[in-house]
Image (cartoon, rainbow, N blue to C red; front, side, top):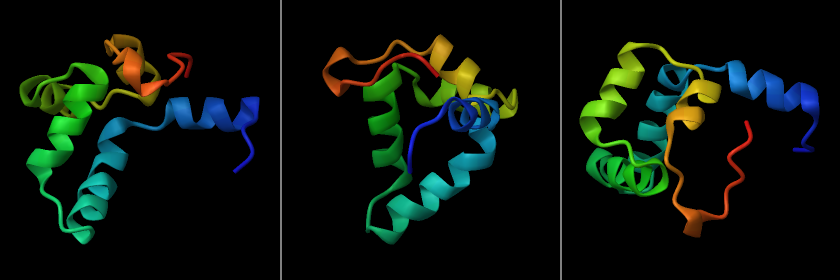
Length: 81
């Protein structure tokens, strides 16, 4: 998918809670566990399970999610959303 400003804005407005079930389905379809998903999210963002569930309950957008993350520098992700 080609990255455009409109695409980036649309993605930033999505809530993490709306996408999280899809992450779970994907990892489970690959034979992985929710715990492994949480380990990867923690490695990427610094959010432990308690904080992750809080962010889901608060229905934060991806923009807010990544603004609050402490991104692992080894992942090579640009912090702009």
